[in-house]
Every structure is written in structure tokens, then in C-alpha cells.
Length: 169
Image 1: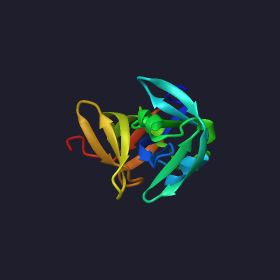
Image 2: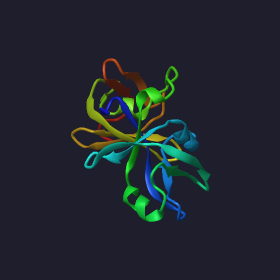
Image 3: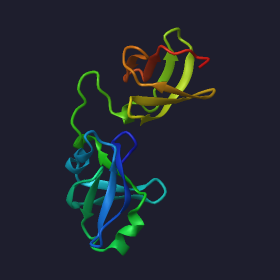
Image 4: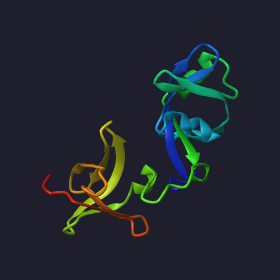
């Protein structure tokens, strides 16, 4: 899958039990939605991607656990720890108007409302209070993803994001 046709939805974070189940750190909201987007592409940029069928899965504590087809003991799943989980974009629901998948924002050119270029969106992360946009240009900037106040406009077709942000900050 190409970068634009695949969406990163989680990561295998550990082993659960002795029968081949894995712990999954889900990037989806709510976290159990990762179990709705099947099959998974599991792997990394270095080792390639492979399609895996989820036989069973459920919320467990603050995370998700899943059993992948062909992985029936803890020794076999050990090799999966730390691998990313992607799904095809067409497996996801259409984003509502004024909503965006993080993957759609990565690579956008960021400028201030005054037209000062700040760089490109490198990635985003969640702080609990709000999401943060990491912009890399002449230096790295962490900009809160607060629509209206800080993020004033997003134009996916033009590949641009406009922010109300002091370029010196």
C-alpha cells in the first residue's frame, strides 16, 4: 500500500497470555474501532507489510488484545512486538465535513495568517488536552491543533494549512 492509500491505526505493543494473543496500542477513537478495520497490514517500512487476519479481539484494560490467524503461542508472536498496523483508506469511514484523518494533514505546507511560511506538517500527536501539529521547517514547531483559534484554515486540495501563530515562537 502506498503512503496515501494506507492509514496507520495502531501498533503491536506486547504479548497477552500464552495462546498467541497480542496487546495492541490503538490510535483510533474510540480505541476499539481498530477491530472494525479488517484485515490489518502488519509490518514496518524496513521489513515490508503483510496482511493478517484478526481471528478475535476485544478491549482489555486500557488497551486492546487480538488473536491473529496462524499465531498460536507466545513465542511465535514475540516477533510482532513493535510492528505497526495499517489499514487501507477505503476500510475507514468517510471523514465528516471539517474533520480530517491525521494522515491527510501530514505534508501540508504551513503558513501564518500573515503569509509567513513555517514548514510542513511532519506528524501529529495527542496530549490528552488537544492534538499537536509538529511542523518542520527552519526549525521544529509544536502547534496546538485548535480549530478556529490556532488552525484557521485547511485546504487539502491546495496542500495548505494556515495558522494564527507567532513565527518566532
